[in-house]
Length: 217
Image (cartoon, rainbow, N blue to C red; front, top):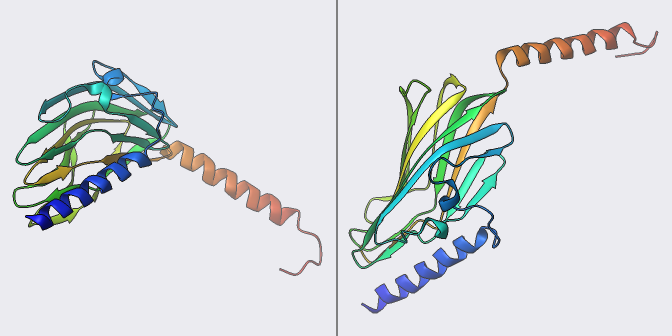
């Protein structure tokens, strides 16, 4: 039993350390986003958030900070349970890109799961504008099974992706999801790519036309 206490103390310290990696001052939380909230990062626009919490985790959505990243967002907060408790956080939202187009998504979650029955995982389903499934992501730590802290998926180019995300922690002795990163991959629209190629071709032609006579290449 002593070794379990040591592992628990180490896991709690690790969870706290990971949580402190996120900035200490947070201007945004899940409470701000629930009920249709929105924000933008770069060319991405996140909207129509709906959030609910259940079980033995904090049910106060203001306890879950949201940090904006250049291509998505980071979620942290009290997603941890002890001694057989369990908790679930459900998040749905829409992400759109007006100029570039969306072609992929990824999720990373360094979960902690200690002792038989412990699990910490993030699963999400991705849908296009017509709510047709286009991908699924799953990152987990499950005692006795192992850990996969990162997952990614590519999909056909689209301007809108609807996301349904589940975060779940369940003990065992201890389970936690200290930090979860959600990211999206965008590329320019085909017309933008064509214009870029045309511009580069024009520059190359201009350079050849204005070469200094006699210059060795």
